[in-house]
Image (tube, rainbow, N blue to C red; front, side, top):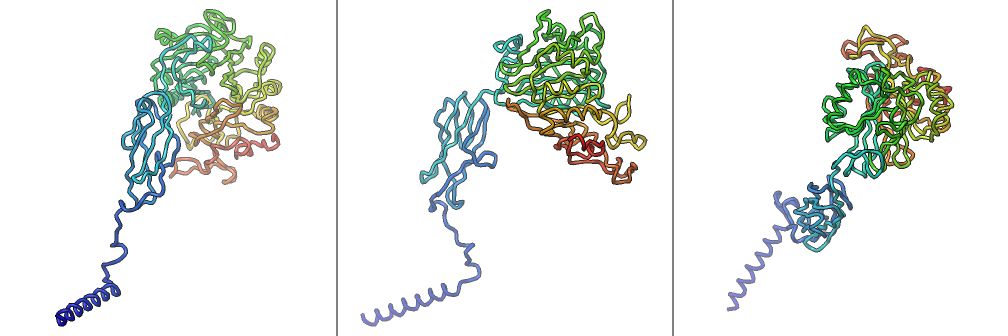
Length: 495
């Protein structure tokens, strides 16, 4: 028996030596990379919830639509499995992180790990903006847009960069409410149509407004409206029901559109009013210039331009087409004008408009100049041409020196210099949530201008680019006073 015990002890000792040899001289395949730990044995120490790759505590979804929340468990080696719950199936349901809106309200969506660490996200559910009817627009209780227009959405005002010399087109959007003011020349209308298609989801313009009958404001109208199914309200310069404007009036009136001329609006004729409500807190006022034409007149020239102020909470926007200095004076004698947040310079910044007394009275905080770079009068612009060297450096044409100087003398502009020109800033967007202020965003200009100082003032054609040398870029978000064009025009003394 003692001999057997001794043999067993020797064998055990040998096995221990062998085991020790293995642990002190590991093989090349037995590395830390080969050692794995089951995630089920590691508890979570933290939890976050992401939407589109960003950590969130709040989210929103429309009724009937989905968002996908992702739970991220820390450390990454812990089990990523979580349980999802909702505080109210009547407001929002959740299935493996996919949240579906059921009805208006706020639901708490909770994710819980296997070791009971939880995280909440407050999900607001709302009815998607949609129109249920069209009102008279004569009061805040009966606005043009009946329904949820997107009350939390900002007001956006776009000054579209047109291609032919000067011309005007303004597009306004507040949630699902859209307005078009003027449509440039005929060739501009095609681009405006694509712009409307992109920004107007329901195919309905809530208001169409035409300032006066000059071709740079109305010739593009038919093309611009080619995909617009309905128009709820049209207010324009008036006159006889003739030409393409008359055709547009007739077409959409037959579809149920309300129509009022500027003359009827300020004189309360034929159902017209000087105030039209698009929603209960977004409306515009037709101002009495004492120059509007009647239904027996044929054309509305610059002094007869439609002048309106848009109101949204504390924000105001004044646009008056091509009003002249004389018609500005008539307006000041007829109306008590408020200070405004945003002003579209009259007549593309003409010297015969934008008087100092008028600018001082409305005292804008921002000024937008709508005047594409002049490049050949009386013909469409089809792109850079080696045979067309006119005004490559943007020193000629609108805006006029005298008007720009007066604009920069307006009290608030003299302090903040918030003047923008779409020949430099492309299609310009001003955004507000209703405060007496706005943010500005431009876009790369489609036409642009050139820095000829880099080639001794001589235009140099680049056959590889099929363009002139030295095109100025990167100025789309700059104030006019901070651009090369401001310097080329010799305007430094204005500020």
